[in-house]
Image (cartoon, rainbow, N blue to C red; front, side, top):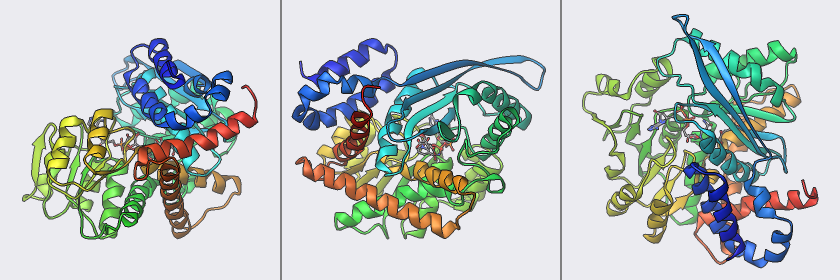
Length: 444
Ligand SMILES: NC(=O)C1=CN([C@@H]2O[C@H](COP(=O)(O)OP(=O)(O)OC[C@H]3O[C@@H](n4cnc5c(N)ncnc54)[C@H](O)[C@@H]3O)[C@@H](O)[C@H]2O)C=CC1
Ligand SMILES: O=C(O)CCC(=O)C(=O)O
């Protein structure tokens, strides 16, 4: 059996009931085959792939808190510190009822390669809880965040592990988490990113993942002789990534026509009304079904179906495995040119393969959504030098980072005879830097 197949089999056997983690490992290791085969003896001897797929540390803890009725609730908290070869652990916190150890491990594993691709000194980690923020009062959110941080604080720090937001964790939650960290540790340091602008946050961090996705999409299309301007885009999600992807799509001359949340989706043929979307999701924290009150000519549909809308490009920005084989078939049948992932692993392995085999340009999340964590690293730099850069400065750096990532992965794909396969390119480019750093630091 080849070394890659052996390690995939071991990961599946040793991590039962973690299908998302298996999926992420398979995607990465499959595309590293060509590099691993060229160095098989050395990698095997050093158990390189075993070390790469085993987190350095996995922390699980109880999070008790009191709801508005006086009832004690108990959730589980997680922080997986996956790999610190190139810098302090860095990656978001997800609060969603579907969270479990396998989901956090898949996200942490992806984060290692993503963070490497940014070219910035950040290792990979991820955390979260099965807490569901939906329908909770601000006081309940605060009580939960304070209890969560009362355990997490001992495992993190500005130079060791720097969490940020992800699904269910935005500016409000980061504020409560930061306040509790400061209260316990008594230090004012850049231990979290995505902070508010009045207490150490960076301009453009809120916009960065969505904006970066569009900078990447534009660069990738340009390399293939296609203009982004004038194209119609299907976007899924209606959260932080989707909203700022829609905003930047407009700024670059494209027309986004859809958005989704966990209950349904909207199709607005004239283009999504960004102000209405922000009002519904950022201010009211309401359902997308409200959208037709603002735009009576738009359609609202319950459930799934957004991938059947005809468009030129698709930008999945909601959650893992939301774009499946049937959806990929609908996209191809509708003549979609490109799929760029704003979410983490939104496309299943079968769907990715189908898209690539049918000539759809495909950029995986670990490259396409890296603008968020890259800007978090810029927030860390600003915190360290006790300065704040302007929006334009941060945005200009973000653009350059996304362009660099694209060319690095494009070059890596070409170097290994896989021109145009951006999945292989991203995995190899991310892997090479991590492996170099791991080898330099000995067997740790
Ligand atoms: N916020 C960030 O900076 C980054 C986020 N990401 C990824 O982007 C994706 C979206 O994250 P955010 O926009 O930050 O989260 P968010 O909480 O602001 O929005 C999430 C959106 O996805 C939808 N959603 C969540 N779970 C769902 C489910 N099970 N089925 C259908 N819809 C669902 C929600 O309704 C919401 O519209 C996630 O995959 C996240 O890991 C990736 C890089 C950075
Ligand atoms: O900004 C960060 O540190 C993390 C963003 C994130 O969670 C991600 O890239 O998936």
